Image 1 (cartoon, rainbow, N blue to C red):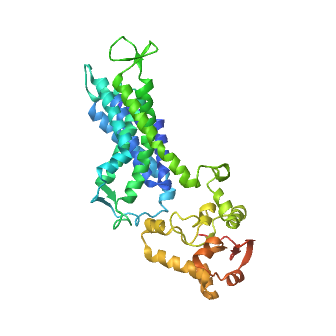
Image 2: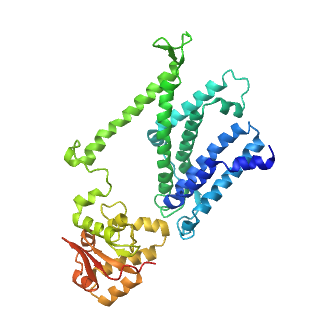
Length: 417
């Protein structure tokens, strides 16, 4: 095969092109996941290249580096229409060495079961494949391991790496002074949790079922129906791991009781619709949100009370309609922009619009933020107390009213940039 055909074959693989396209989407959903799964993709490519290039280290490293660059470039180009409009310069201030670390017993409680299971799985594969092998190179080892086993190894080792990285370094952001590692640990370890979940399901079955070998009459075997044998250590490890996994389900009862206020009843079922809780908790606001979804086109700005992270109904209008608002969740906006001066100014001016008796001041703020609709509902009343509804109503046209919820159109709805 000519060198040109060789590189064409290595770089035009449909799997790589698909990986680049899909990884690029992480730029707009969660950039942390782009970094995480880019590394996972490169790890998978490295494994496959060791096998495909028959262990020739020069070609393995060269091909893997070229494929990594290809995936990175493709992902970056695909997402350019988004990244060109999205400023992340204020979001992080570099990477620093971790000054504080998790206590060993805390790591063991959280990650001991999947971590130890991964290590036992890798060790069992090494012992099984290297024992009696004539050639013990990395290439011959990988070619002797089944593809599903390789995938489980990759998932498990990447998950362990994601758990360990925040113990070594962290991304500097707004949490630097009080909880420096918090955001880094959160973003990395929830992906580790997913990888461990995939890996554990496979390994538990592998230890107890799929690797059962035909009986050859050896003494070190558990006879199953007279035809199959299960190595004792393997079966014992699998059974212990399954029992430990089942023991963690004891928390399920506490979680159910805590969430439902007792054992779940049919009347307490809240459906799988993540927005349905609004219908029961704040039905008038929910009706106003439905009106916006049904009657508003484009992306006009809607004013609502500025919110705080993880509160029950904060920023429910912008969240449920996708329409822009003046200020979203306070801490998240701070994290994304790292500009408390502007954020605090917006927070004060949102409150001014709802509570001021100065019509000209309110008009100038509406114009400043190109607001098309004023939403007055339960959250605004709770957050700001007395709202000057009569004055606000006089500034535009009431397009929706139900109970204590009112929507006022203060422009033609097409003012958004």
